[in-house]
Amino acid sequence: MTDIVTVEKLVKRYKGGFEALKGVDLAIREGEILALLGPNGAGKTTLISAICGITMPSSGSVRVGGKDVVKEYRDTRSMIGLVPQEVNLELFETVWNQVRFSRGLFDKAPDDAFLEEMLKGLSLWDKKDSKTIELSGGMKRRVLIAKALSHNPRILFLDEPTAGVDVELRRGMWETVAELKRQGVTIILTTHYIEEAEAIADRIGIISAGKILLVEEKDSLMARLSQKELRIELAEPLDRVPEALADTGLTLAEDGRRLVYSYDTAGGGGTGITALLSRLKEGGVRMTDISTHQSSLEEIFVDLVEHDGADRQETAQ
Ligand SMILES: Nc1ncnc2c1ncn2[C@@H]1O[C@H](COP(=O)(O)OP(=O)(O)OP(=O)(O)O)[C@@H](O)[C@H]1O
Image 1 (cartoon, rainbow, N blue to C red):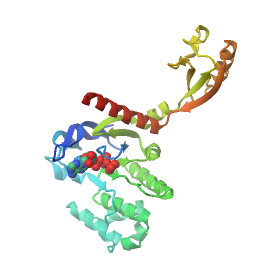
Image 2: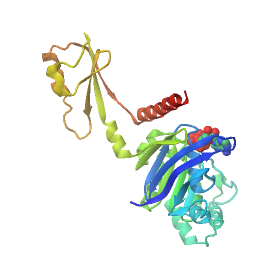
Image 3: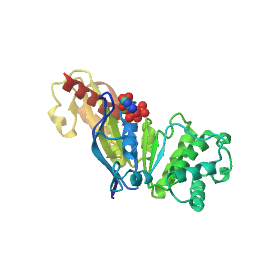
Image 4: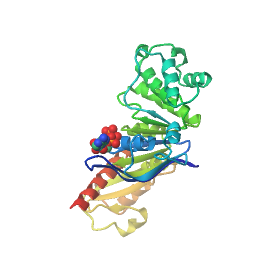
C-alpha cells in the first residue's frame, strides 16, 4: 500500500515558544481509515492543520501525494477535504448552493453531475433545495462533509466528527465514513471516543503532548486486548511459583500473595483454567479468591499517556 501523506520530524512551535508538536513522524496509507486518539491539547488539530497547510511547520516536512505542503500548497490543499469540528454553515443558503460555492473556492470547474452523485451518496439529494436552517443536526453534519468533498479530494480529515452527537447519529456517521472509504477516499479522524476508533478505524494512532506514542493496526491492538488474566489470591504467601507448576506460565505478584495466569480468549480454544485449578488443588495451594481481568483499549491508552507523562517528569528533573 502506498503512503499518501508523509510527515517527517515535524515540529510546531507557537509564538511564545510553546512546542505543540515535538518531532512527529507519521505515514498515512492510501485508502485507509486512521483514527487519531489523544487527550485535550495533545496536538491533534495542530497536526491536521500542518498537513492541510493551514499552520506553518517550524521544522520538519509534510508531503501529500508526493508534494510539499509549504512549497506546493495549492496542489496539496486541493487533494484534501477538511471537516471542522464546528458547524460553520450558511443557515439561509440551500445545500446545493453551498456545495457549488465550496467547489468554486478550489478553482475547480463546475461539475453538477459529480455534485449530484456525491449528495446522493450522502443521502442529501432530496434536501438539495432545502435551506440549512431546515435540516436536522445529522443532516447538517453531512452537509459539512459534502462541502469538504465538493472538490473531489482524495483525502478527508474529520475533526471530532461525532462530538456531542447521540448514539444513533454517531452510527449513521460511521456508515457514511465506511461508504467514503469504499469509494477510495483516505480518511483521518480525530476522536476522544475510543469506541469510535474501535468501530471504524483500520489503524489507530495515539498522540499525547505533541508526540505520537503508537500507530498500530486496530486488529493487532484488539488481539492484544483478547489477553485475559486470572488472578488467584493466596491464603498463604509464597516465595516463588511451586516447582510442580513451573510449566503453567504462572507468575507470582511481588508481595507473594497472588498468582497470575495469562490466557487468550480469541480463537475459541481452551483456556486451560480448569486444568490449572485442579493442579493448584493437587499441589496444595490454598486460595481465598479468584478473579479475571481484561485490559481495554482505554487502559492501554491511559497507560501509554501516563507512562509518557512520567518519563517527561523524570527528564525534567
Ligand atoms: N495558536 C496557538 N498559539 C499558541 N498555542 C496554541 C495555539 N493553538 C494551539 N496551541 C496549543 O497547542 C497545544 C495543542 O493544541 P491542539 O489544538 O492541537 O490540541 P488537540 O489535540 O486538537 O486538542 P483538543 O482535543 O482539545 O481539540 C495546546 O496546548 C494548545 O493550547
